[in-house]
Length: 155
Image (cartoon, rainbow, N blue to C red; front, side, top):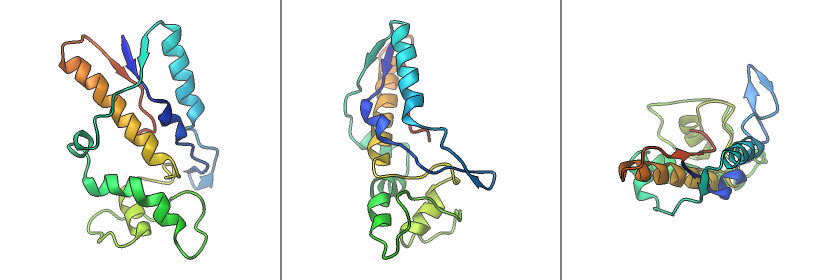
């Protein structure tokens, strides 16, 4: 079975994780994906890097404002006058209506909870995760019986 995974997906490396009111060690770490890739290779599956299909197919599924948030959030966060830390992590969550004024308002809208911080390389990892999913979907669409996209970060 063809398996798609890009090493850039390992660049997402959360340092914070808020669960049940406490800061804990993150569970979604690069080593998790590395173990899965090793297991897939151990089964002699064909592990390939996906082609770059650009952002258009990703934007067909996800709101473009959300994609821009993922791409720009860490840079915008680090430009705040106070030290807000190294990862974008909201302590409030506001869905609609939310005018999306500023990085904190965007984080409140687009982050689901305290377990999904955005770091310096989250966008690159998420972008290549989506490319992996697109490659596997294209294989199946083109007639393959199966394909596996190892996607991280999740979401």
